[in-house]
Length: 325
Ligand SMILES: NC(=O)c1ccc[n+]([C@@H]2O[C@H](COP(=O)([O-])OP(=O)(O)OC[C@H]3O[C@@H](n4cnc5c(N)ncnc54)[C@H](OP(=O)(O)O)[C@@H]3O)[C@@H](O)[C@H]2O)c1
Picture 1 (cartoon, rainbow, N blue to C red):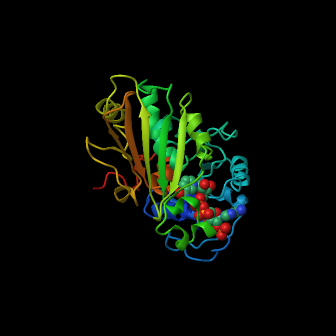
Picture 2: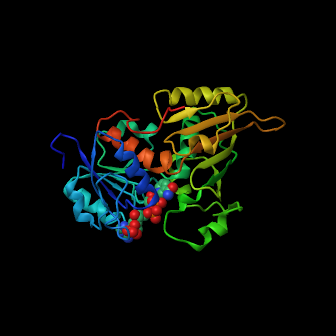
Picture 3: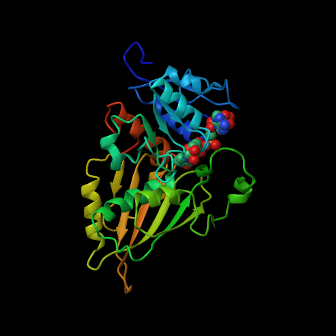
């Protein structure tokens, strides 16, 4: 419950995983809230990134101790926490896919793609924080679909690459250092990645062909999108559409003409960078879009705090690493 000084309290379930640790690092800098607990089973008793707060092995009943809970748990493991929070009237930002669009359990949840659903966040009880890959794809494409510039008779081809923290912190043989270093491999071939559920639900009527790749770096995502557009639509029009749509967002940067988004510029930030390029020598007009973001930042913990900020009445960018050059 709220602290003596009136600050709301928050708890983090799954605080010792990659998204939980990143979230705690951001919350440690946020002077508008106090972190009351961070759960972990294996690391119970170890120091968390919040000074003076150790991880504790706590169950869902403890959600009643706080005003808002973040769930940084594996898919499925968050469900008892969501139920306990509902019973106690506690607000939740759920980082799992359990209540995202396309999950079949999205009823009653607000999708936390902050820039697209911000009007619903101040009253939201349960926020489904987006997936990392869908964040770049949906922020790039949703305003363009709304503006009617996409030729939806042709597929949108998305080539994406993510650093290995995207797979979580549990040990896996195929993610050992010796398996990933010097390597670069596609996975989920056949257009079956689970993030497509969320992308298709938010971008209805678009044919999406999505191929993720594993990049041998710790963090960051770059998505390169071949976008079929209607005749006469060029990069300048797309850039202007994004700039108008995201004019008030501290966390979306639309790059200038010729600027190329880079992993190194977004890693460790809570921003997504969008860029668009014209293409020569194609019969059917097709633009190249690039979205770059940190999977743990705007792709997870950063966006979770952005959502919390609007749920609790703070400025959207408070404590976030946005707009710094
Ligand atoms: N990694 C990303 O880039 C990213 C981006 C967007 C969204 N997400 C989503 O965010 C969630 C967390 O991802 P992550 O990468 O942070 O995972 P992770 O690194 O594997 O961390 C999972 C956390 O949950 C705890 N945990 C695991 N099983 C549990 C259980 N059954 N009950 C209670 N606690 C449990 C783990 O610690 P103990 O096992 O020691 O308890 C750890 O603290 C996932 O649903 C993921 O899909 C991840």
